Length: 205
Image 1: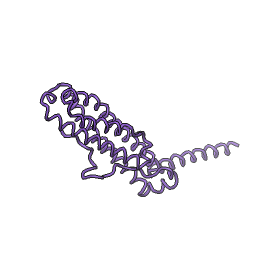
Image 2 (image 1 turned 90 degrees about the horizontal axis):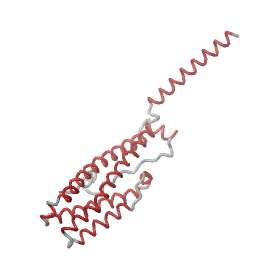
Image 3 (image 1 turned 30 degrees about the vertical axis):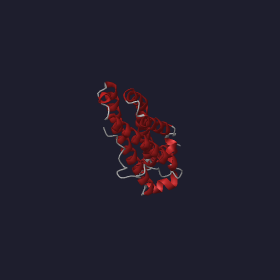
């Protein structure tokens, strides 16, 4: 009886050792890479979303400030307002990552807002009083800082998507994808539709 008990304890020990070794082996083979990289893509996308929202939040005050000094520039002001409205009307949670058309629409809407803001900044050059207004200068500085943050967020998102997609398409990630994660598809990325499109749009001051 004692011998059987010792054998049972010994067998349990070896079972536990084998299980630990198996887990270590699988972990070392990258079995968790795909869900890990997917979460990194989602986190990077959240930063893109946050920075674009930060920019959208600056627009109303910027428009009102410019209007106070350059009300006659109604066409430019209207273009900025409409571009902001379009950009903020698109759903931007991480479900957009599974919808290439929505992602492209989002990118185009943000590019249109960037262009409209660039025209607004160009208009300000014609109004010295506006350019020296403290509120305008503060908003201009915040907008410039936000554009820099957008550039960083977009770069991080592009890199995260590339890492995730590469893992799915190459060995051994391709094997784990077919065995365990076949419901996780390739992620869409920002499309290079214009020269240097891999960089975030910049508003020139």
